[in-house]
Length: 498
Image (cartoon, rainbow, N blue to C red; front, side, top):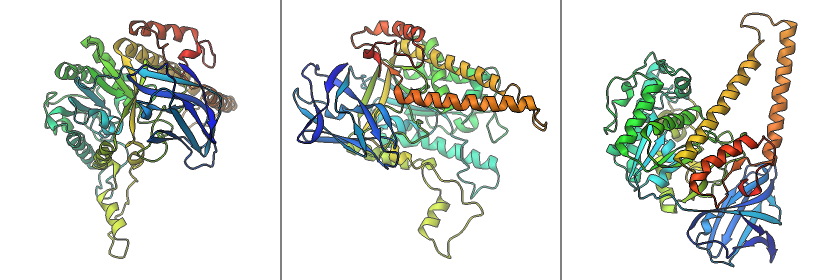
């Protein structure tokens, strides 16, 4: 951590790039206290140095310590002034902290991108995998979610069978737009929205959500490549872990890209990575892990328009320990490719029926019985950015992080069990005691939400080891931190608080 002073010069705030920074760094984050107006539509800070400029946007009403991504000024000479111009947000012009990260992951090595659903690989890591020695593997067929094609299907089972098949085909063909041929892609064919239940019921076979089917080969057989066998296979947790292990042995990745279970709120994303951790324990090889989040802050993050910077997501509710942060640059030409790869995904665009209605809004329009739901086209704004952001782990620290995530989930499950105890059964009138218990439970929940909100405004709750720490000591450091730090306390040295 390098202390800096934000000062004004000619009416513009900024910093002077220090001469104590070694060449070869890849990511720089400047910690500043910000306050954005709640009614401001798109607050941002513009970073400018020489002929380079970029913008980082914030959420309306954002306040507290936030990290401005300065990675776009790589190569800046010592003594160069970096201007920080704000619009719709204010930041304190005083002492700030600069965190510098070096040792970029070696992306010339074999890369495995593990995506929970069709489109997740492109949203998070198209810039990383494009035109590299990468394999793109998707865990689920994407056969759940919104009934996207209900305008042309009367039977829900047929609708979701079609949706899973067409999304699976998307997942194995669209990476070709980034130079990855179908023989280096694969979709495992597991069922969307089922991974957490598979983990909780490890010995059970978990069927599809909308169809009476438990054979993942209904979808898997559509694959062109042969990274895994295409045969009848039940949907159960042990099979998912076995398949992931077989995939590791086949691809032999040295860099693995996957969701971060503590920062990504989608359960399929979380348990994709849990399955990966169990497979890695059995494979027993050293790898570098680049973890991402596609679901943060109610799917509003990252903020602002396409083409701008992304930085750390809003403060999470629980402590998150990372080895380091890596901001991967995505040049404009690759951003355009990424945009059209995303637009090719059926689930991220309007259905043919809706498109026809938009094009012909007159009496000749064919109006279906059901218009169908809106697609989540916000990814066309949120994903094509000037960088992709990852949280870097080695094998040891990754295992420790997974243990922490699962421990937190067990605590939350136990708390939910206690909360529901005493509630009336369906069809029964609540007694006075049960009504009082329910009122107290709601009050406790409201207080806890308020308390967490206050903590999130005061702390960022992302922690990094001290820069001088040897890689082998990081896992030990994380365990020590988990033992000594209470939520809301400040027992950790400021050098590791991010």
